[in-house]
Length: 75
Image (cartoon, rainbow, N blue to C red; front, side, top):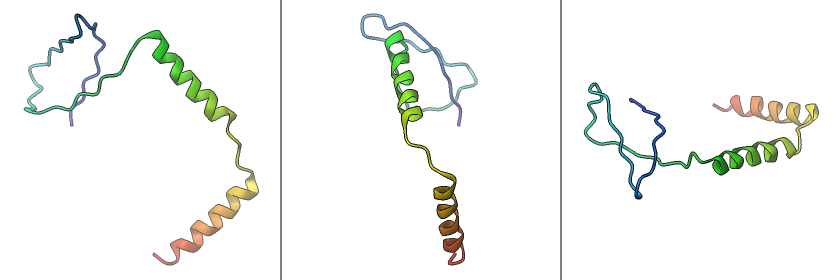
């Protein structure tokens, strides 16, 4: 799969993307994301959400790992 990441300006509600000559796909998937400054704040908000989440204790991790090992015996 070829992937191209490019920043471009929106002009009159349209964008123009020039593909390289070696890009031979006949059908593509477009995902349009805002690159404005306020969009970057969303990422910061998400990172703060993750940092504020409760942490797993070593005992909780060990209990999960033991259950995982037990389940592996069945596969």
